Image (cartoon, rainbow, N blue to C red; front, side, top):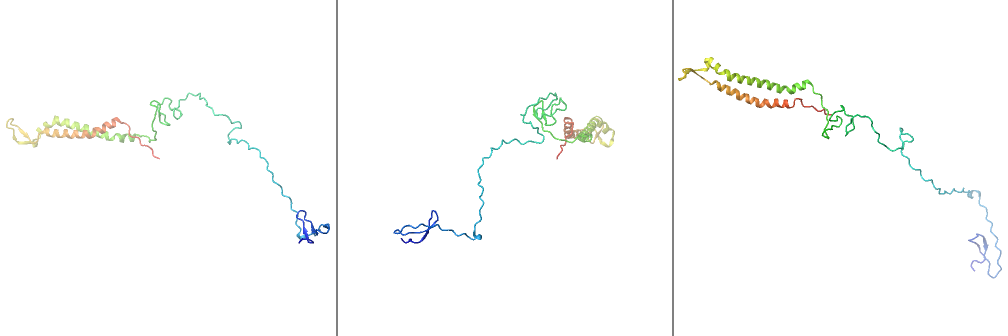
Length: 226
């Protein structure tokens, strides 16, 4: 009743009409004519946006192995073992050629083909004639000294008494009561005993040096250091 005679708009069709009175016959509602909007207020038509559609992507191709520049196109073969028809002897440990063929120790890795063990390899300086001479020099000196000392001791035991007798300054003024001969101031054999003891001491120092050189005739190798 409060809205009788008022103009309202239908929410469904958006038409404007006047609310009739219940006692009066319903009036036919005239559709309201919408006034056109000014040109500056009219909305420009918006272009329809394309709808993104989900497209199934094809499954990824099987990954192929990375190839190298020197690979052939059909290089997809398995590795195999090739047979070596050559009769060159090789080391069973490093497969290097043995030089000479009948060698017992490999010069590359130090493997002993007889004992089946590996030796440690090292680089050394070449041994010269001067190195060998200097290595043997102490033994040569000791040999000369000991031979001269031995000769002196033998000569002393043979000739010392005669020399003592010929030199009167080595004789005492008093004569021996039994032999009626002049006595020695110092017994000649005492000097021979001192010389013999000295020679034995020299043998104790020089003989080990000589024996060591005989057992190891080559000088020690000097290893090269980086």
